[in-house]
Image (tube, rainbow, N blue to C red):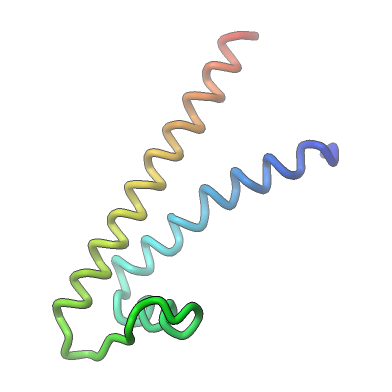
Amino acid sequence: MRPTLFVPVFIYLALCTVPLGLGLNLVLFPRRAANFLHDAFVIFPPVESFEAGRRLFYRLLGLMLLAVWAVGMYMIYSHIATLIRGL
């Protein structure tokens, strides 16, 4: 791989994996993922086991991240398809 291709490939990989991984964790394990976000970034308050409203909020946040991932994958696919058709 040429060094000039490393940066765009890395950016595309980051755009593909971060929303997918975090979104799936928030949907499947909302309490654990939310407490991870709290411990790592102190953005959101911690979630206890009895707080169903906060768990629902984090699940919806995870679904939004999965939607962002799907739109991003569609845009990447459409750009690659346009480049291939242009060759």
